[in-house]
Length: 267
Image (cartoon, rainbow, N blue to C red; front, side, top):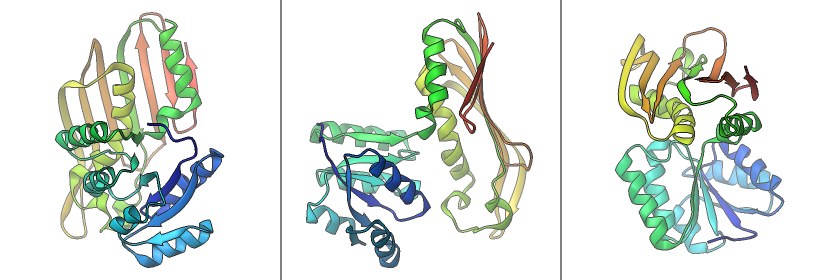
């Protein structure tokens, strides 16, 4: 189902909501009609900054108001499944921040529900829309790199909350949350280019214990195979140079995408 001038609601009034609001308005077609957050102060504050937008602190009230055709779900990942399901059942198209959900069966259930309701689900993997990444895909399609033998995707970038908090944020509540948060970026590249990752192995290193006694790992390495391509994913939150890159080796050439800087080098 396509709506030419959708009326959009933002569910979640955290820092990412303003980015989504700017992007929605930049389309020149969609209109923001509502903001919903468990915190009335946050909902009203963002609504006021956007001007002429209704504020809610209950999703059921937003749905019942029937002022929106679609919602952007911008809450912490552990809430994505329940909120998306509620909004789909309420007849709303959903655009969900990554990761879509925290379990495969949840993703499959939501996808099936959307089809049954004739609704659309979108997942916000923002790096897949970079101009440099689109050029990389075109280069692969044109055979400039040849069959890809191996790919390495890196997210080596310090994460200050590991040192200074706030230690109660969702990402720091359990070690696996860090992989859900950052690994989703890397896996999105692999899925988009080569399909699903199989024969997966995970290694962790450089443990650190934060206040509250939770042990986190500052380094993750995930290896596997996607089709005929060997895959390595590296995540590091140790202080050092920013290395957020995708590196491909093919029969005819190599490529390096710096997705933090939106640049591409092909040899």
